[in-house]
Image (cartoon, rainbow, N blue to C red; front, side, top):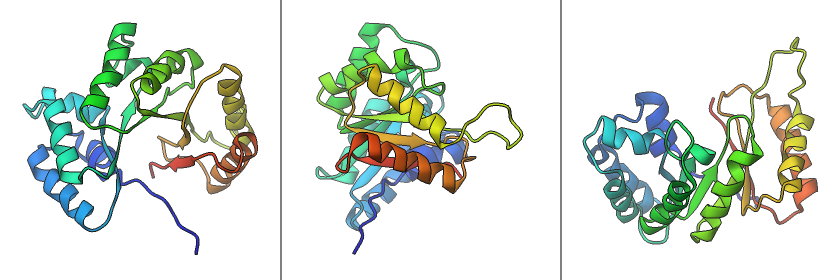
Length: 216
């Protein structure tokens, strides 16, 4: 029987997309615990706006929330967060020491995997941040940002475009533990996603971990 591996994104991406991440941890962590008891083992637990909103809107310490998430999910669960390249969990580029500290602190507070993306697939925004993630003992999930353009657009954003992005990442020497095709706008067709993953499989080999993050 074919096994489908999935990560529950409701507690980061879901809360962020539906409520701008302005939800108290005490309101969703009991659900995390229930999911863990039901057998779910892979959660998106933080990063991005969920980290910011803890301080800005919820009057909570984001690192304490991360510790509580680990406790709710249990020691065996895989916890994954999101980072915006050199922007990390902020909205502008950070200094190299902060980028390194981000990885070390997320490792300290129970994170296992960081999905690292840049909206424009800029190699330079992913190179150092990715290296810091791996140096801290975290798994680096390199993301390729996708967006399907209208059929009459002069720019070609089909599967081959994203396969070329992967080639550029490989040629630049980016090291990663898994690859994610991230359709943050929820606009890519199933055919584009299928063909992009198929092309990546040919480049990376049969054992590479390739995942898809949809937003529709």
